[in-house]
Amino acid sequence: MCIASYSIVYSSRTGNTALLARRILDNLPAGQRRYFGPPCPAACCAPLLFVGFWVYNGGCDPATQTFLSQLHGKQVVLFGTAGLGGFRGFTGYPDYCAAVLRRVKSGLAGDNHVPGSFLCQGKIPLSVGEWYKSQLQSDPHNAVYRAMIENFKEAQSHPNQADFAALDRWLRNLLPALKLPF
Image (cartoon, rainbow, N blue to C red; front, side):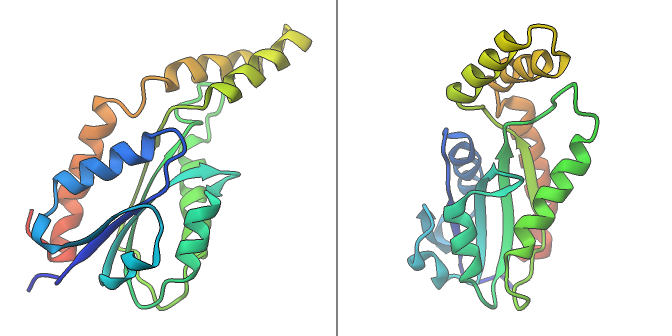
């Protein structure tokens, strides 16, 4: 049995999460789509929601947080981008991603079900890169800021083909559980 419909809802500050949303859209049956776009009550007409966010203060962005808090009785598939990415100076990245996803899920009412979630690196806003550089100027020997600037440079190419391939694999593995044809 196939789920009757789905919506793809996303918030995207730099365009990263929009790229993931478009990739998901391209891999799902168009006839079952009810909504594609930013957080909006119209998206709630479907029983299955793919909800995309950008990481903000260790959780999801405010627009997504508000949207998630209003959901009840839905299957909610989470996906997002985090500028921190593969920050070489931060060995706890997998733990960080898991913590972000836990925080985002905690914003959902208990009558929702989260069958899966995906998080990858995304671009970091230029203003953040400039802030890193200003911090390094005031402390030129700070290894953490040097590593953050390197991560900023690396992040500018994300999401990249490896991220999209990981998203495609994740989606292929998730779809049978959602009872949607792939």
